Structures are given as structure tokens and as C-alpha cells.
Image (tube, rainbow, N blue to C red; front, side):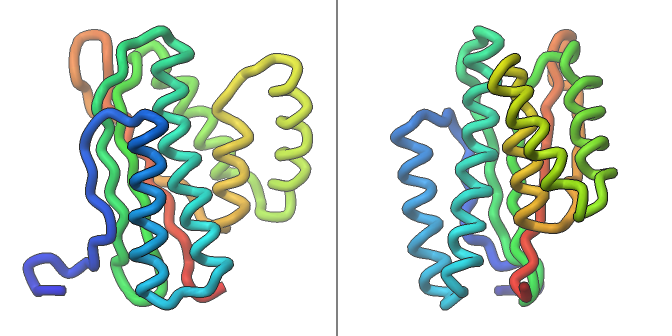
Length: 171
């Protein structure tokens, strides 16, 4: 760690995500987390969150019949008490409002109501195949913290979505 880069960087990747690359990144994360001597619970949560965020980006392209585009992934430790995971991917501008509303809704749920919403969404997604629900809810349940969401215009039709979540290491 230096004064120029005050955060400990664990993963920094830009590229297309497929099953093989996701598996490689998760394996690399596993090695780095093991070296940090974190609890098994924290390591499992980090794995789950990383896999879920990478899968969301990949599935978004597939669901919209869009060509796979590069995503950006950063996993860092801003201080001794937390790890942040940030994933950026291209989305259609027409989806920006719905995604923003869904994340804001999940952020607005009290911790004790997340499980109830999770169960309700599970039933809904099985019958309607909506997406954007179970994964975000389970990440929020595992972290206990809010998502940070940012959109930047990429082109006339697309935005870059950046979703950041933080995992508290002191459970």
C-alpha cells in the first residue's frame, strides 16, 4: 500500500466475462482472500457476491440479445474493516430507470424485511423470470449495507452502470 494508492487492491479486471473467465476470477479471489487470513464466512460471502455481480452482467447481455461487452471489476480494501466490490457494464438507456428504481427499492428495505422480500421475489421470479431481484436482495442480506449506483452516458443508446457494494469484515 502506498500514499498514492491508499487502498489495497485485490482484483482489477476489464474484459468480457464468460464462464471460464468468471471461474478464473473467483479462483484468483479465493487465493487472495485466503492469504488475508479472513474467516471462512467472509471468504464465502465475497465469493458469492463476486459471482453474483459477474453473472448479472453476463445475463443482462444474454437476456437483451446484446453482444458481450467488456465489464470492469475492482475489488479493493479501503481500510481494515471492509472490502468493496465494484462492477461496471454497459446497459441500454431504456433500462436505466428500471434498474435504478429496483436498486433504490432494495436499498430502502429495512434489514429485517429483506428475507420476506427475498421469499416473495423467489416465487415471482420462478413464475415470471424477471431478473434483477434475488441476486441483489441476497447480496444486500449478506452485506447488510446499501448499494452505490452510478450511471454514465456511453452512447446515444447506452449507459455504463457501476454498482458498488461493501462487505464489512467485522461481522
